[in-house]
Image 1 (tube, rainbow, N blue to C red):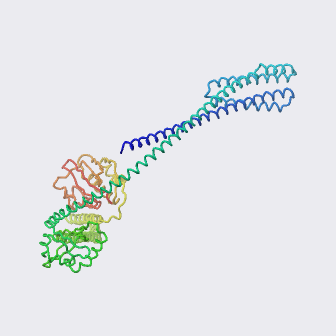
Image 2: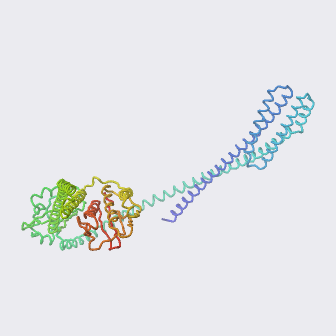
Image 3: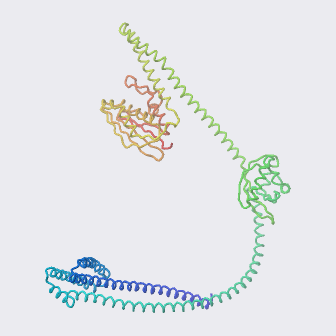
Length: 601
């Protein structure tokens, strides 16, 4: 930018700044005039209100005098109305002049003289009522010239004088500010004219600069054409290097014509992989290396490539080698220009072995899925068998048990001791068989379906469990410490059965000390972990897994009753709720049973 242009630009900037400053100044001056106008209107309002007070005071005094002259009570009522409105008017006037310290004492004095004048007039009315008309006449005459009435007029005159002084002062201020605003507006006109002149000069110079720039652009285009010619020669050299890289690539590559599908270039690695010579490839099209059944799909893909030529895409195909072998390949390609023709460069990766591995994995997965299905069906069949077997066994067992009990009742004591012992063994065996069948039925009922699942409040469940074992807890002098419990997603009946079995074991396998049971819950990211700790006889570590197997017992039935199926049911319930169960214990040091319930539905 030349010196003249810099000066013009600086001048324009200065002129714009000056114009803006004048505009701001004019706005400020205009607002000052508006503010002064508000003060003028306020002063006029004070004068109006002062005159209104004067009129009301005069009306009051005239009505009193008319009453004294005529004795008509109408004038007395009018006087009362005037006095009633006089005080609010003075209060309003004091509020309007609250910003003027000289007016407030005057208004206070005015109110004082009005009160004294009212009392004086009241005295005159009293004298007139008793027949003394001379005294009211003298009082009114004196008041008009030198009394309270004259003082009222003097106070109002002083208030008016002060407000008129302010009015003249503010009018003069307003005229001065209007003159100043006019000067500011003239300055604005001058600044805008100056800005226009400078802007016109700047435009003239810019047009001249534009003409010179077009000439420079023409010369630049000539130089650019020369640079393009040089770059084209360099590009030809780069293409030669590119061809070297293309032919020596470790991946099979080729270039084909997008319109005719003919091979234009094929690198050494592709010749080696497919077995064709360069001449044989260039006499072929893409269709010649595809199985016949894949050609329709190939043509659909070619059409899609033509619709989206700039897309870099990869896909899996089958290619045929010269010896007839079919291989699986991953093909990636992108569009290029080849000697002015639309072409596509393609890179090939042989994935035959990978596809074979994938096929083998799919076969293995299908086989595993089939075996899992068969195992699930087998488990379901076993559960149905357990349920049916235990259910059907109950009827003949009830018959055996009933007849044995009848035999014991009718012939007990009539046979020898050996016979009574045999009958006792038979009845006891039948009862134990019945208990085993009932536990087996209970175990088979713990299914795998989630239809019965819902929100379960564990606090409520433990309260119900405590009610079930209330008598046992009292008789054993046991104590149960239950911490805060969550709500879980599960089968309420089975969650209740789970806690019942664990609490029942803690009450059953206690030591010489009164049972102490501690139940806690801890939240983990994906599940709730519960623990039930007791101070019972404990378990040796080699039996930790055995206790969860159905019908497995660690003690003789004469020491502790039961069938050995309770913990197996607990394990099955926990697994149905997506969790696991385990125990930590030592002999004579109590046991702690842990189990989890999944948060996932």
